[in-house]
Image 1: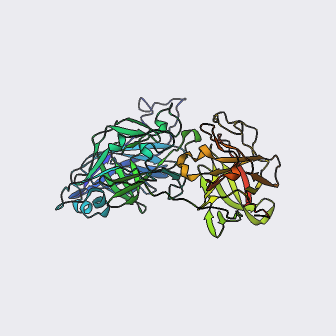
Image 2: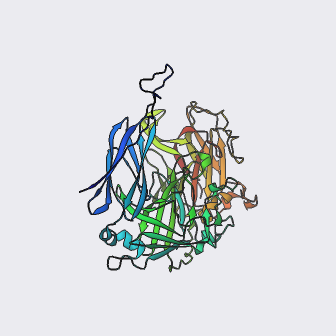
Image 3: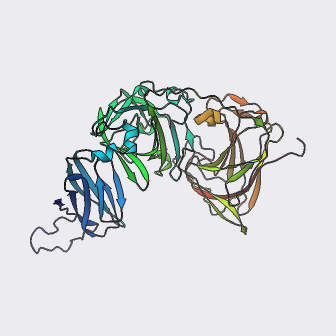
Length: 513
């Protein structure tokens, strides 16, 4: 037989204090309701089916199974397989069109599916596998210090395209001078049957948003505040694999998202020696609550990470152009390289406001630093050809007057949405500090509701370091380091939103070379 456990849950309470009592001021409480039940398979109580009976006004269900695993469903019943024994506090959130309610219960699991775990490729790679269907020696992991050991990327993307750390980032190669030597000694040993992650750590890396006084984007080292071990599980959801660490556990990097520590890591890559994961987070709480991905890489503890050989891009002139007519592709010499979005920008291809037969790029700014950008495979020789052109359409429907009261001190537009374009050149060898030495030409135009062609000349432009104000280049046309182009519209350092249109970007080729 199956074990049946009924948990009755009341959301309304008792309205009347006496039978038949009635009050003229009585109000009706509304919201989603239901009764949570669960059944456990005979001889396999790790397989649990949860059911919401008699649901009223429920559109969807959010299940938290108490072991770090979650699921969202439009169905009233889901089945979950536990991979460790113990008592699990289960919470099911009932979602209606305008309200939520929670049902709670506790499930006791006394057995696990040993064969399912021991025969799993993911468990074997993470832990080293079982021995005779029992515990193995486990496998120990550490935070990676290779290029890209820490990265960020968009929520709708699959890669850390916005930013990747340089080699030895955690030991100080980050341009800001912070180092995390004690945290780099942390070790995380994953065992199997039972599934536990043992932690050996004295320190941890705190995301800068953990401390309201921290310098933005400057993570810092703190005393380790977690437990010595955590349970964990590996689950599959919609074709993706997840590492779930129970009870708020984490691996070296600590951050709070929506008031809690992220414990559900999507596994991007798992091999014998590499564990590369990501989780949804808020990159900068000052920009709102929109989510994006943070990427973290771990390696097996005996992996030695050598400094990579420096790749020196050729310094040369190549023609550069991008029509933005239905494509983000740029033609760079004989190559095709796509522009990408950064941060909270939203782009789309739409009909030209003045010609329905042509598509242009709609560019909607939302955050403090939004742009479209392209990284080149060469360093730009600007000695002869050093002027760019871009056609821009500034709609009159945008609000160019309202000031963002939360604008940063470094805003370039007094905290207002501006009919302005910043064309920036970056040196990618600077990693996350490329903004220090950026070469920026800023052009404004008050023309509304028609196309204007803006020119950005780097001839004679003095470039100063934005961090220490030292001179980087007396003349940007003589530079030999820039290999990334950034187009930024509307001003930076504020969150005033606005939509613009762009087309026909090019590096102007002079008649005489």
